[in-house]
Amino acid sequence: MNTPRTKLHALPACLFLCLAAAFAGSAQAHGDTVPQAVDTHTLPQLGTQAHSTNPYRTGPANTEAVRIGSSAYNQNCARCHGLEAKSGGIAPDLRKLNADCGDAKSPDKACLADMDQYFLSTVQQGRTRDGRVYMPPFKEIFTQEAIWAIRSYVDTKSPD
Ligand code: HEC
Image 1 (tube, rainbow, N blue to C red):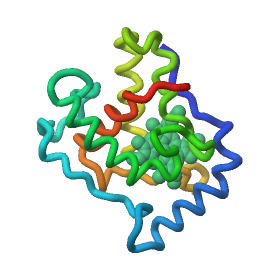
Image 2: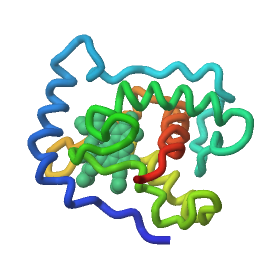
Image 3: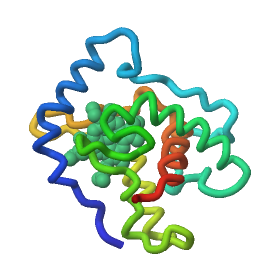
Image 4: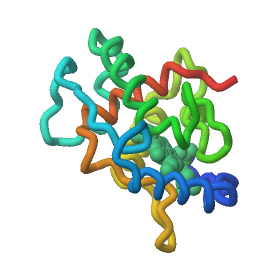
């Protein structure tokens, strides 16, 4: 398993665009740039303990997780990570997260679990370096259920 990398190439464009996006988000009281809470009551509830892997990856809850995740992604992540998870270059292309885990149909399970952890913690904490917010933290806005739903949605997208 490779250690998840920081995508340095995303930085130059981001210095301006992401800050602009972040400020626009906090300044507006409407529209899709304000973080949107996600209704996850139709999913199996997970309790307070953080799961180490995506509990909705397989099984009957997957379809509902992808449905909720799709809407949550488009309202909260698409403005930086691109519509349909296809990055326009502002922020990393999330479809590529699993690229090192082998074949999409039978990926390395330990690798996928590491990516799950990386996904959960990145979304909860966001990314701030040297006082610059590259990505806002979502831990006050999203339940664990919401984050795993978004992960389930992104997993349905394969890189070009
Ligand atoms: C304001 C823009 C912005 C928003 C909104 C945003 N992100 Fe990010 N995200 C970034 C940037 C920029 C990076 C890369 C940061 C860095 O270089 O440290 C990043 C990194 C990530 C990473 C690590 C990717 C990698 O390849 O290492 C994940 C996972 C991620 N974001 C998921 C999300 C999800 C899910 C959402 C929505 C809930 C979201 N982000 C919302 C800008 C954003």
